[in-house]
Length: 278
Image 1 (cartoon, rainbow, N blue to C red):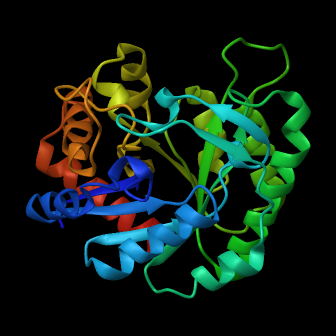
Image 2 (image 1 turned 120 degrees about the vertical axis):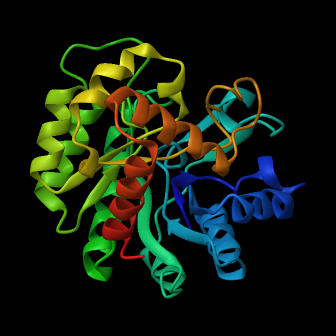
């Protein structure tokens, strides 16, 4: 595989109707894919996909938005999908421990804090699930996939990135990837100090605000991802993102850093292989 999409969701309903063709396209384009679970059912589905396709891997865990009840709209579940209701799933370590017996499971998550969908009243519930997943990752020796999202409106003294850092520093004994990174460079440096990496999505192909951040972060501390079916990169804006679109993310990183594409693609592949022991 030449390219690796380190964070995708072919395990969500947005791909129910044409999964086989999407997986086939990924193979044709030499793209390896890590599908990330959001709850028990989608984690199980990620493992099923990984075990039946050579270029697929799985990360299993409970997304912070699934830890408390809340209704989410179509924009949050992707093009062609249906709105869903999170009912407040309690993290069951035994269930996820069993899933992780598969050799295709390479991490735990995505876990962390989401202040975009849930207000501060759910922080304790989110933290309980977060710490439980860190403990399982420590036990199994698997890296963590971290979700971090701030509220629409800034609240003084409340920052999801700072809170994730605090919990990881206090509890994690394994490395972690801060996926869909949108924090500051100063926050990124703190994460690097405790063994974390960051990853970028197709957003960097159309949002210039990320360019200085991508330029500043060392290439050996980053990954490329799509987070499909969300945030399709240029030139696919307005369509459902697919894992092979990760090539556009890698191209943009190379462009921002003014480095040869082949060099960047190779380094990002090696970064993923190192973190996930592929």
